[in-house]
Amino acid sequence: MKKMWGGRFKHGQDPLFWKFQSSIDYDKELATYDIKGSIAHVKMLGKARIIPAKAAQSIASNLAKILKELENNAFKIDPSAEDIHSAIYIDLKKKIGDAADYLHTARSRNDQIVLDLRMYAKDKISILVGLIRKLQSALLDLSKENADVIIPGLTHTQHAVPILLSHQLLAYVEMLERDRKRLLQARERSDEMPLGACAMAGTSFAIDRKYVAKLLGFKKVCQNSIDAVSDRDFVIDILSAIAVLFMHLSRFCEDMIIFSTPEFNIVEIGEAFCTGSSIMPQKKNPDALELIRGTSARAYANLNSVMIMMKGLPLSYNRDMQLDKEELFDSVSMTEDVLKIMSGLVRSIRTNKSNRLKAFEDDESLFALDMADYLVRKGLTFTKAHTIAGKIITHCIDNRLKVSALPMHELKRFSDKFSTCFYEELDAGRSVARKSSVGSTNPFLVRQQINKWIKKIKGR
Image 1 (cartoon, rainbow, N blue to C red):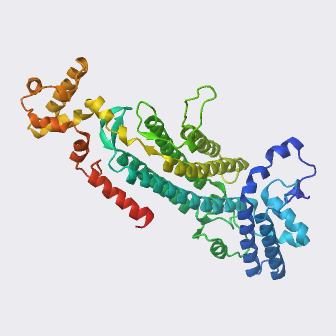
Image 2 (tube, rainbow, N blue to C red; image 1 turned 30 degrees about the horizontal axis):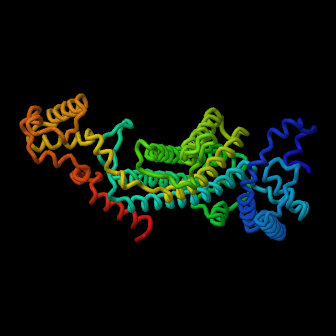
Image 3 (spheres, rainbow, N blue to C red; image 1 turned 135 degrees about the horizontal axis):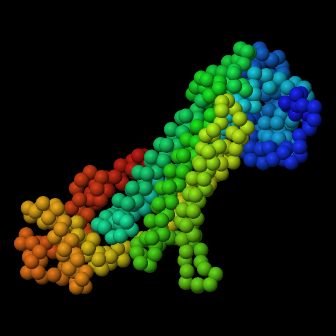
């Protein structure tokens, strides 16, 4: 098949280079968008009387047939095609002959490629934000089911203070909301129609770019033809938002891996998301969580790949920019899969409620902050109270004692501010209930947050 750009060349391309430069193996992902963009373009050309109306109608109707073939998995890619754009053109030319050549009027592959990519981005982001909502909903349901479950809060992966499990789960709902908004912002920046930029300088034909934008559902048109074809910051926006999303997903996975260990025994992951060991019969490994945690590396790598590829390119278009697609398609595809898996995984989680207070019985240092706050309410400065609480904890560790086992006369050796009501502070339920600041782990405030999210996400 004669190449669209072959007029300048006397000789053919090196076969190895031709195979190397071909993008058809992955840019076929854009086939639907390429056809829809071409239909809009040719309708505009006919409407503006730039090409004969009859040719425009023939091209549009036959492109619609190709789209139908594509949707029915009946479209066959010509082996001589170097990319999806030429594959569709080859098929169109087989159907209508030389009339297909009108399609290239007032358009370059440069603006055609970025049009397809922006249409793809808009559609896929809409899917991803919907999947984030489903994951938030699953986390919200788990929070509601375990609204009163108290667990040891961790800093530096060490016991810190009592918190509600639901409070920690809601932290991820908040993170995912920011991830959702980042993707929506990326979608907004993708929502500019580049067609009409042509190679880089625009066209001498009286095209109607706003009409094409309207047909394709774009809010506005790109205002600078060089910028339209030469930047991929909207791709980087998406990859960046996905990388941050995977950071949050990975941290959640790590939390659940830790919480599911026998040492913590807070949660149990459903068997549908675990595997066993080929040698140790007892094993139930949280493989889904570990693989999602590991997949975050790919999200970061894809972002870095496109950033590095773009960093030294002069304006305007350079063929290096072909290398943005595999990374984008990979990140979007794995994000779709992971979000679907995560929603099911979260719904499989069960909490070990019978074991929930054992950690506080075994390690009363979790009440050290409550001890300090108690002394502050008795009139000491927090710095002084902090020091006294620390000394009491050290004394108990050194002598293998529990704080609750210390008699009052021993406590008064550390401070005369202690009285018998102090022992009431050594209670996980009382500890979380004492927290009263906005956004804290207080059960009443956490239930308010759960209800707020139910209303926001589920509309009830």
